[in-house]
Length: 162
Image (cartoon, rainbow, N blue to C red):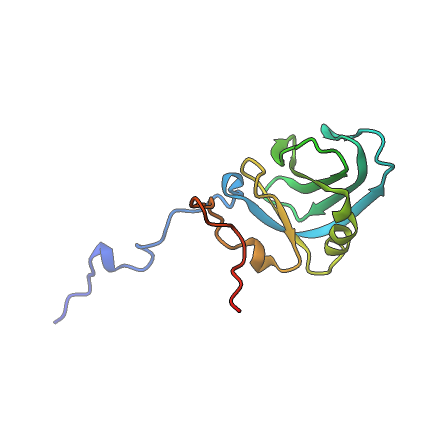
């Protein structure tokens, strides 16, 4: 007669992984679908401020709100300016909100607003903010991002294949 016992390693469920927390990994960026868009067209003369986000010589402002990520509401705030002052993108967790920022040149306002109102619009926030972005195809936001290695004498961009 054959034995009815099995070793522990062959029992059902013995290879299950530990439960995951399902918390967003903000260090590696989070991609979310745009739910709501708010926009303002401004004079370009004054500084615009909204919840700690400051845009010098603001010509426009767009706020994207996305789907919740864990316990956090997600936002991408985009300011538009004529100022030559470089303002780096940022990311921070504030109370129950995850907020990414971008500041772009004034001439990008119209196309950014059009992107934001696309039914397939998504945005990416997290890390130190340098890779905050928006796209009309979520796949474009999920590509691996790497630091560029620029070799001396080689120009970055497309190579003319003609």
